Image (cartoon, rainbow, N blue to C red):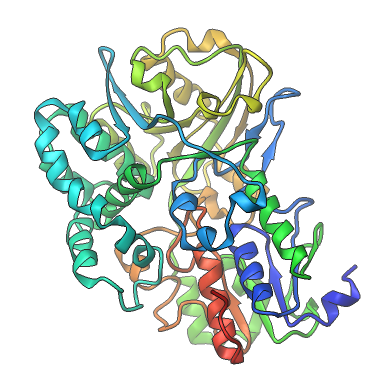
Length: 482
């Protein structure tokens, strides 16, 4: 049952993912009474940590590696260290192995990474040197709605002109297999064919953050980040209610503002006929992206990667050359399950020994699959790991698998297994979720969207929630907290 505090709340937030909690904290800091309602038994959304395999093995259920949290203006304003969150940054942010024991490594400075790319060293420095020098200027603008006026237009133009390119075109700036594969592997986080516009932006942004802030993991698991936000919320007088699924907006108590950490599909379901027909049609046109099949392993030891760089990396991209990665992503876009999929693997144990019993390790990984797939492709993922780390299968003590369809059953926001809240196409990068000037206002009075289906999109950065909360405060005439 909702508490008396919930009935008198100024703002109600439905959903306690990082964006929902970011919205709640921002509103509470401005002096509003805030109540958060979460359907699951624990808060966190994409930031949960559980013993998915064996006792003592702590696995991040969804998000595991947090470059955008480290770069996020919201999290910097909140002050994660003061809330007890420790970010552990691996020496190598990303390693991308190739056959024959070779690997490209994204590590440290631009110069350090370039030095490992042989003939591509100069090209890499020319591409990334200016972007990284200007990262402090551009990252706040990149993580803001694209319809806002950039604070540093020249620097943003430099990023944007390169970022608009498809990753396959941008990769031609580099000539070696290692350099091209490194960029392709990072750009494939877009979950789009690498021939699509703006896939280059994903590669540039995430590689910039690797040099600027690293690709850290949260010591003890991603759930600690969500727990810190809950602690901050409750210290400001906010309340949290778990285990209550909201089925209709009419079931909510009166409030000055309702913020929904949900996708357009859930918004339509919650609001029913309250949404005008033309807005309902616009929401129905919102596109969701590829799904993922995700696997967690309990291992008896570290993964025996052939390439040394992979043993020091928090994240390893598997898939081979640029052509192989591009083919895998094209297969998914065409509705096929790749035989040799592009895979993202995270090994938090390289910097966080708390995740598993002494001498043991956890491993986290997924590959992209067609939306809604209920096919278990863990064997194909393990074959890709074995390809670059012979003997890996001998270390497996237990595994946990969630298909794309299983992920949606776990969290309705993962429509079809899409963990990014909607496809990051060029159109939906600019107009997300629909062509409205303010993307956070829902087509209903006093109702707002604060999920990853709003700008700047997927990732653990809290900026969708903060953006929605700032819109609420402006509409209510309340000063925005610094």
